[in-house]
Image 1 (cartoon, rainbow, N blue to C red):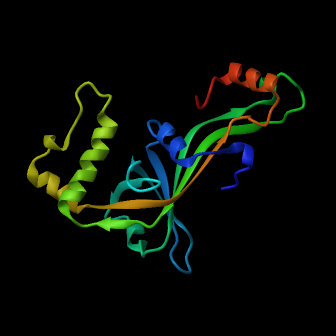
Image 2: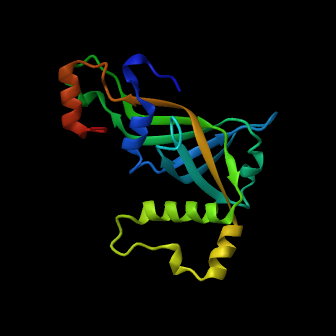
Image 3: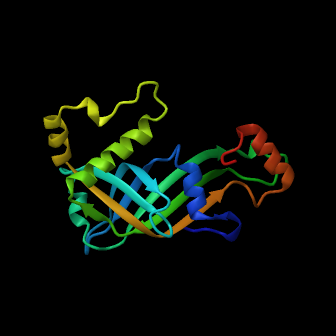
Length: 192
C-alpha cells in the first residue's frame, strides 16, 4: 500500500480502533504461477498475540482457497471508514475530487488449526464478538452437538500471526486548516 508520510498511522493502534466496524476483511494469497486468490471473511483480531497481534478466521471447506496455505505470506486488508470528498466540500477552490479513507494491511503466514477445541474456540470467539450488542446474543449452545460437529467439519479454521502491519489514514491531513474544517463540517469525522 502506498503510504505518504503524512498519511501513515500506527498499524496496531489503528486496527484496534477500526475493528469494531471493520471485523470483515479480505484475505489475499498467491500460489506459485497463478493469479492471487481473495476471500472475504469475518475475522477476529487478538492484539496480544505477538508483537503485532494475531488474526483468527475460518472459511468454508468447499472454498479451495485454504488449500493454497503453503507457508507463504498472506495479506489481510481491513477497510475502515471511507467517504467521497467533493471539491464543493472545501473552503478553498484549489481542490479536486478525492476519497478519504482508513485502511490497515496485515501480513503473516496462515496456519490451519486442526484441533476441534481450537476450531470451536474460534467459532465461539467470532460469534461472541459479532453478537455482543444484541439483546439476546446467539451462541453455539443453540445448536445440537450433532449439528455443531457437522458445521465444524464443513469449515477450515486458521490463525495468522501478524509479522507486519501497515496503517494509512488519508483524511485530508495535507489540506489547509480551513479546508479540513469545511470537509469535517460536510461529512463528519471518519476517525476520531
